[in-house]
Length: 278
Image 1 (cartoon, rainbow, N blue to C red):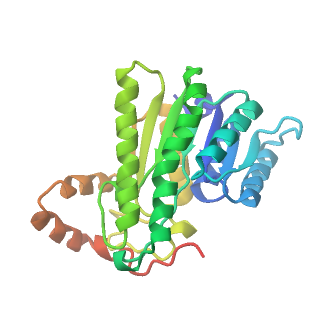
Image 2: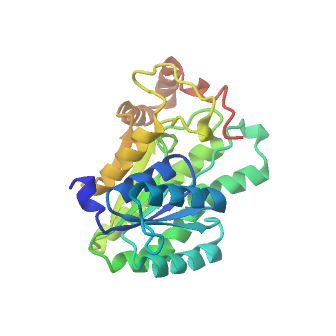
């Protein structure tokens, strides 16, 4: 199904949509005729995204196509309340896109307890809170999907990503198990796991790649568009770029074989100059 057909009249929730690919997905979905709930811990950023989306389509202020919510997705009680408010505002929910994420980018010995706990609270536990909060609403809609924006780090783990890679492996495992569970139950709710390589957002400022033709730093607009289209097409897994899937096969090899291959492609040096979003 084409994106513009799938999203016409659909109601979508996107976490971490105050910036980056979350914002771009929201703009694209509203353009395709959908309504979007913009969730972000930064309320001002969420409102900016909503304003941009509504202005883009000339939405009537009395009937906005994008609505902003200030939500800390690590707080289960806050998520439950925001989910209820979202359903009241939109009337229903067809698609949940778990996009919120954080990265520390520090060597293991430099990671603080606060950084580690925050990484898992945002990248892993929030998936449970949001999915549980919206599952009853999703069950009521024939057009229903749960999207997890994970990472290629959930396929291959490299240096300076101990907390991040562990959290993204967990995110991939969460969605894989959820997919199996939903299929076993005969549910119509679909799932999509997204595993992109580094994206040119502030979140990954400073990362590098040794072979840009095979493993390019991805453009955020292209990633946002690919995710929106993958949901519409009913895809269950999206790995970007395609060569990153090959790395998954390498990861399954014995370390004495896999590690030298990582070295050839410079995977362990990609985070050496990481600065991240300030």
